[in-house]
Image (cartoon, rainbow, N blue to C red; front, side):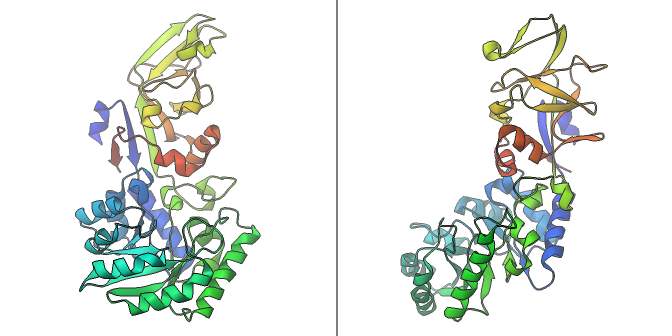
Amino acid sequence: MTQELSRSTWLEVDLSAVQHNFEQARRAVGPGVGVFPVIKANGYGLGAVPIAHRLAAAGADGFCVARLEEAATLRHAGIQHPLVLLSGLSQGAEEGVVALNLRPFVFDPGLLPSLSRAAGRSTVALFLKVNTGMSRLGMATTAVAAAVAQARTLPGLHLLGLVSHMACADQPDHPENDRQRHCLQTVLTQNGLTGSQVSLANSAALLSHPDNHFSWVRPGIMLYGASPFFPARSGQQIGLRPVVRWSARILQVDALPCGAAVGYGQAFVTQRPSRIAILPVGYADGYNRLLGNRGRVLLAGHSRPVVGRVSMDMIAIDVTEAESVAVGDRVTLLGSDGEASIDVEEMAAWRGTIPYEVLCNLGERVPRFYV
């Protein structure tokens, strides 16, 4: 952590909080249900490798990724757990799936023969992905019988079971949740797969719909301390711990008269003699441009407004009411400072988006430190 002193902006990722949130998922599903943390998109922007190592030690049954490159990064880092390829098998990816020993979601039965050929003398464990209502990757329910027969006949393939994805799990009372579950159960029964491995639940479903747990679950956003529900509410309300604190150090403090314009387009004009502080963070770091004249930061435990437009590398904050402020002072953009906090749901609301996007958009040039 001493390296942070030389940084202008940085992230602290609390791995103990990630583990706590994982354990919340484990408790929610109980014994006998596998928990495969979703660490795609570089662990939702927070660092897939250190998170994978921490959760592997905490008892994760495997991990979920979206792309071959993400799987390769984990394998090269020494992660030997089962890796599920959520985005499925695409044409040309067969060799990579075999080389990395992945468990792909197969949504196109037409790719099963090429996967069999790529397997050679090895065996590829796979899931068939069924469209139960999401209509975003997945074979029709009427195509499952033929795909099951093919997967069981072709050499080098081992069919583990079926998977699907819920469209409205973030709205626990939505009738589509029950309809999708019943659809999947019907497909399982009709194809003699009731004893196979089945997965339907993401973070929202595993927390709100025990009937959707099936064989294994796929917690994602909850691991990173954010609520999976919509409208969003703080993850702390459902027993989750915040994972990330994003900080920056003040570059400059300037005293401006009433009527002074700040930033591009002069989008903010002081209405009184003001003190304006400049922070070395902008939209290139993931501090979205929509937060201009809308976002807030924490300085010495107090909330201060972002004023003017967000630049590529800088933002301005109004510190007129701060008792003392100096170059080098630490400012919190996301996370806690004393009794005050800005959680990821709040920042998402300022931007009119969801917590997933806030985390995934944190810039690569912002260094991560693991607590």
